[in-house]
Amino acid sequence: MSAADARKARARTAEPRPVRLCLIGFGSVARAFCALLAQQERALADAHGMRVLVSAVGTRGGSLLAPDGLTAAAVLEAVGDAPAPPQAARPASELLRASGADVLVELTVMEHDFAPVSTGHVLEAFALGMDVLTANKGPIAWNWDRIAEAAKASGRRIRFESTVMDGLPVFSLLELTLPDCRLLGFEAVFNATSNSIIDAMGQGETFADALARMQAAGVAEADPANDVDGWDAAFKAAALANVAMGAGITPAAIARESLRDVAPERIAQARAAGMRLRLVTTVTRGTDGVVRGAVRAAELDVDHPLAALGGDSLGALLHTDLMADVFVAERNGLVPQTAYGVYADLLHLRRER
Ligand SMILES: NC(=O)c1ccc[n+]([C@@H]2O[C@H](COP(=O)([O-])OP(=O)(O)OC[C@H]3O[C@@H](n4cnc5c(N)ncnc54)[C@H](OP(=O)(O)O)[C@@H]3O)[C@@H](O)[C@H]2O)c1
Image (spheres, protein in one colour):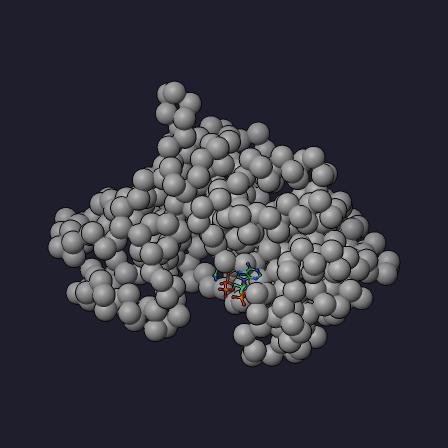
């Protein structure tokens, strides 16, 4: 019997151990995460020996406090289609304390400028003895060193797989499957919305029409700056560089080119020349040891792995020392895949204990 099978057999015979979550932020990712927990309830118990319960949910618009714990399905039912949980809003610090949770799941919005609110949630959770899961790039991109230090000092853990490529493994790929392998730099297409707009423009649609169509479909954010001005990619670049390259940078240090400034003719000319234009994020370490990054429109040869990524795809070419170039890509990634990344992180937490 393999070690994994033996673990599953043990999990089946023992009573599932309750794991209590405090969810701060209850938008599309948190709801998809709860739907996935509900769907996987049986597998969590049988294969992992876990009974996952939600003891608090908080947004600025409302809260739900249930220290004994509710199933994820019960939470979804209690909130329904309402924009916020049904009880009056409570400050996050009050909810964290009252929840008695084992794990904070931080799913609030990405903040610019040192992510003070979400980083505060993370630090407070560590101080209360909780581990943390998040898909929020802000804390990792702006405050990684501070967070890593606080995690170490408190003996708690934080996982954040979905911050960079939805649920596609990048951090756990490096950490768990490429031991001792160093990330030297990377090239990536990190933002599917801007990639889709480029493809649409290549087919004759204007930038404004393509953006409006994606906003109407709920794919692009209402404020398009994060997608088309390269901010989303810059956050992801800083997060990955900070964690995997010890870069100590912030998104503000990543040079950005906006898709608004890319002439449609440039996209057509690239195609005519047998190339593809992509908004490419490049991160390298200079001979001075300093890590630098940029998000720039670039004409790529068709046999470049990033050139082949269609509008709905994300991908990263990871330059490593021991495994040469490793290419990871995702097609059709949507909110459920981001939720899966958080779910996978929950299982990794369990495995580590
Ligand atoms: N959507 C994706 O596919 C995706 C992919 C990768 C990463 N992410 C990241 O995952 C996180 C969640 O994304 P989402 O799409 O679920 O966002 P969303 O739908 O906009 O939901 C955000 C939630 O956070 C709450 N919130 C915002 N600020 C808060 C605060 N200060 N305190 C408490 N609650 C707060 C919001 O409610 P109120 O406004 O009522 O407070 C809302 O419930 C974001 O950081 C996003 O960048 C998302």
